[in-house]
Length: 284
Image (cartoon, rainbow, N blue to C red; front, side):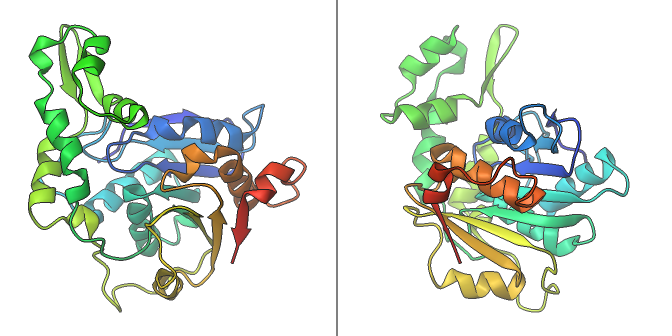
């Protein structure tokens, strides 16, 4: 099944971007346009809505294999025979890792943003978000401003991020995220927080990997590096100073520079790193 996608850029290497839980492909638009350059001719990008998010279709159950299969199908449908750089954050990062392990012939480069190939356990930390989204009386609101007033979330950034999933269809409102599925996952096996790969399931991914990690994030631990490099031996880890889990929104200039160098090479990456970008990252 093909996923909904936004496109940007007119020439150059193919790049696909995957968002995290509660996100949408368009969350990557600022980054994708900057990576493609001022004339939009250095990369050709697709910004995908994962299943159960944005404008992509909903599923009855969740599995990383199913998500990866739809990403692969979308990339193969978009271009026949061309290879891709696949960029994924959080939930999208795990999906990207599975897709790369399954199809290294299709995915020639991989970028994983602030997530590791391990089981994170339950998703109770997100249950409050889901409950508040489900509590919002959609049949009683007429404007987005009313939704913002009624939505009980003290962090304005989190509130704006979650409410981007609220969509108006004619005279009614609905959530684009499949909240029932996410709620079941939180209350059940928490497969979204898990990691389905067992030792021996796949051959190590042979192609280059850029692993962007937030310097202030708790999602990646020092001990995760061993597991990461067992599956992805050609991994370059870049720690982005001053960034938490949302690396690409908190330090976009560093992420853009790192992506351009990784995808295009230092010669084509528009004059090299700026002082600010260089100061914001360290590699291992």
